[in-house]
Image (cartoon, rainbow, N blue to C red; front, top):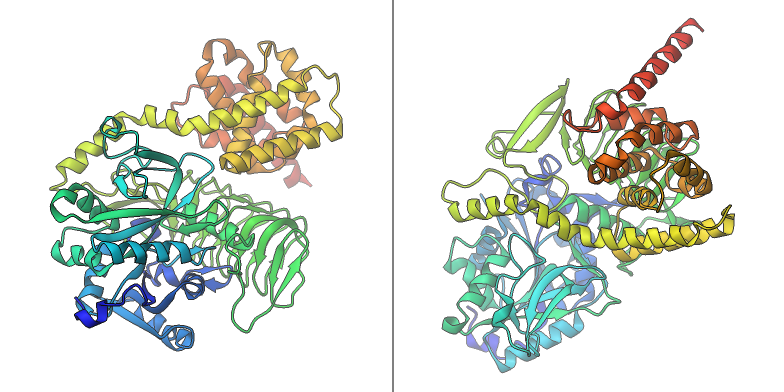
Length: 635
């Protein structure tokens, strides 16, 4: 604790910021095997530099950056680069730290903090706000009551977010459940009328803390996360008298702390679209060109590219008819003709082959994807991986050029797919893309094991909860289709209006593009009197322009087929005879390609009940494909 004379005027002091530059999430391996998460480049700028640019706008005088000993050399330039902006920049090097708790214990032991601090739990953390009001409110509360030890920063959400119970003054009464953030730790029956339960907010992970909050980590070595300390304070409030407040940013402010690839992709798109203005993808002493559609090109190069809301790094080669949307392309990349990249990050020096489609995909440095390779959604591909065009991948997988190292063997297993191509998966079902990581169950983790079992037993209920938003979205699409069902022919203007309505709902409900593709076709199949194939054929013709807009790319066609399968699973008796006919008709009218149908079929589970229904169609397509190859060889 600092001397008394240093704490007299804490309300007048500027804050320090503690930035955790490491990721303790196993999912970021092998991306962070040779560098920290803070060194990851987003639109050619280091993640840590975005965070420091934002912190420099806040009421912060000193910055403490916590890094591992392994990655410390890369931060030698931080102090010199930022010393003119902050009063001091201190790099705290940790040995054998495996959690945020370990990192904060190291900070506390160095005595580098003398007052309140802003906890930034990820190096990919930034905000459009200077946090002026939350910081002022925290200082005022602490001046009146030294037990107000922490204030969490939440942002508003248009859809269901993190659940939290607050009293009239913003004091936290109950935190979200560890297993399900949409629920509370406590039963709602305990709360009176003065308590508000918010489900329309998101916990950004950022917090304004006093030194008393930091002391909890040194007092208890079991605390590994910020959330464990929050729960400890809430449970022991009657004994310690300490409490936690929540400050909710206004709806026009945005904030993010990234802990998974889903958040990384989302923050990448938000930076490009300047949602965190004045943060912008621009290196010091460099230039960018702003092109139509908010396509940003680094340096003075002019790249001809279709798409919008994209960042193109220096020395990038782009083939004809290439489409890039809500994505960033690192420097020295090569994009083949007819490739499509949506909501993805392509690392420096990577090659995307002709006709390859990426949707919600993360590529590290020097990845090569050859022509013909099918990349499912939500795939992470590590550095130096080469995919030869025929390797079968699964959605949500991580692909590396080597098996897991000794440190990862306890929680990760791998399967060799080809020479220097390995698919990693968590031994206890860990999800690489997003959500809570589940590695190997701890030996003394009986309580956690029980929670996991309960979670597994409630999978169906969780899916229903997650499906509420998708259900609303599908209903709105169905209403839009029903409104035009009486028309013999749909005009181009009507189709455009329908596209605007669907895209507006997509943004409002935060639905990904691949799910839009699935749910649009589910809504189409739910139209009345679709029991007859002749009716479906007529309606495919009617909505042809709409379908061509949404199903022109392979990832979207996968989404269509996934939606068809979802509808079939709920209507097996009445729909079985129509499955193959619909797919065949969509192929004939050029909405589905042969490659998409065969690729979708190849990735089905071997026990999927739809397989027998499409067997003859698949055999016919494969035979046709072989005949085409024979003809090409003869030529």
